Image 1 (cartoon, one colour):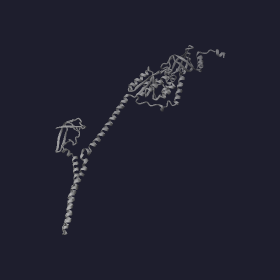
Image 2 (cartoon, one colour):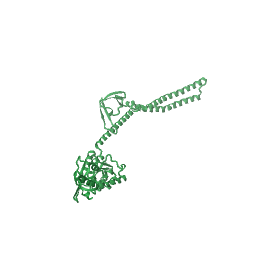
Image 3 (tube, rainbow, N blue to C red):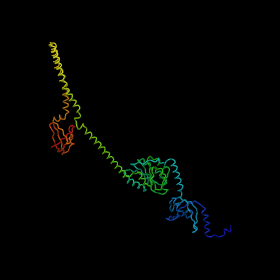
Image 4 (tube, rainbow, N blue to C red):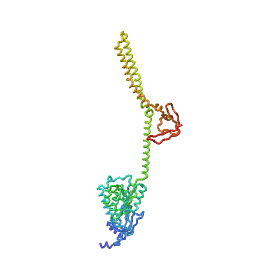
Length: 460
């Protein structure tokens, strides 16, 4: 052993021996980044960790593929928690620490706790799709919970003003960072809901992992899930996902996207209203046309085109009864006279003379017949007179005979209103003894008097 120890080694052999010994040691180191070199085209990221207490530094490298997989962006001054092995670059005799994995100091445990919380809430059903509440299509009041001084509040208000200016925005300005931020966020949610918000935006701008920690609070997550109105989150940037995003009803990538999710575009609403208005107009036009056709059918019924048709059957029946009445009484008298003549001729043929008794009977019968006959005729004659008078009263010719006139258009339609003709149109005026052809010069409508509406035409 002494002989081997005293045997000198070449520089290369010594470095290879040291390299084999160092690469067998895997350690976990925590240190502050003092130097950083991450240039495009390099195969690795080079940085130096220092220990402020012991005034020591350690050059490190991490191959680019592992660095990208880790997804941890760090800068000078950050404290890293790295795991790897020592490596010796023999060509330069330089020792490096080859990093296999890294995380910001303390972030690894926090991420693990957040992941476990997410699994717990998911197992309880707080993230189920069927538990998500639907967003109102046209909200009248939109709640906004965010920092009053950040850029997010202006992005959201600008987006809502551009897309949906008719909504009322209820803003609760609260701290979004710090230990007590979850309590302020929950209070802001309650305030906008109490003020009548139909949907709530919970937003904040981008930030570091530590900046977004209030949105990973378990109490805040449960509060969001228990809200009575839908909650839309827009926290950080596209890659950022928090527990609040997972339990919210809608998760948007940015505050602006969250505002777009709850606010319909006013131009789409206007187009929909114009379309509905056109359909309503078409429907009303069709209904009016249908009513006009029905009115025309009613106007062309015989009742209105020929008023006499209403009493045609009754008039014919009255004429028939009059004819029967006129023929009934003479026929009855004629039959009685013929019977008397036959009886008289039979007595003469037998050579018998009328004795006083039968003569008196015949005389009495004749007298009775003469007295009873008119009484039989009188009721029927009076009834015929009444019916004739009623028929005369219903006759348009009777109306004309009393000094009235009836006006008709050139097409033969009865003019019942001053609105049926216009100046310059021709019309026919029927009177009792003929027809007067006229041209309307103008139409005058009189004020109603005594509950009646009067109108007059001036004709020439």
